[in-house]
Image 1 (cartoon, rainbow, N blue to C red):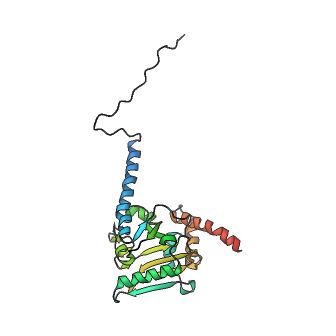
Image 2: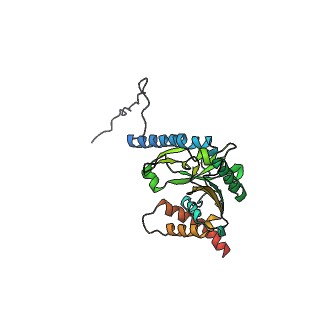
Length: 255
């Protein structure tokens, strides 16, 4: 018969790290590298996206994006809406004087008259989902971020000219366009009832506003298409399904 020893096992004492050495991390090297990478990504996003936008008059707010807004890819489709949807444009030709100033004034007039701004002039702006990564951006390039328009702003000039990096095709890519005076951006009111898109045409640049963009035929057709894809579940499909679930109670009440 074995008898339990009367002596208690000696516990191992954790020695403090030697002077000048950092304490040992509880995470494995793989997890630690991932966490450090995410932190670097957040810092780079602030440095390359948030801070330049603030200097251009757009403050990016942490969180605050409403549940299931109209997807970014659907708002882009509003360029195909006709005048019967209530669409209105503010167009400035390249040969007109003060191109950026006139385009800025046109954008602001549309934004205020259609009701893009919420309290404190806040709205949604489509921004990169990740720090610049061509491979990831092909999968889901943009997401909504809640922003606030500051007192001193320049959407068509400074904001459109914020350089982001090289595109997958090797061209310079900017946050809200291709360069100053060449905008490409999508904006949405917090309740998804107003969209404002900036774009560059062959002869000039414009902002176009559409009321209730989710009710327009081009947008509905695209959302239905994305929601019913039988292929791999994509971010577009998930966003489309979330929008349709949000709209289902309203449609039932109106029936």
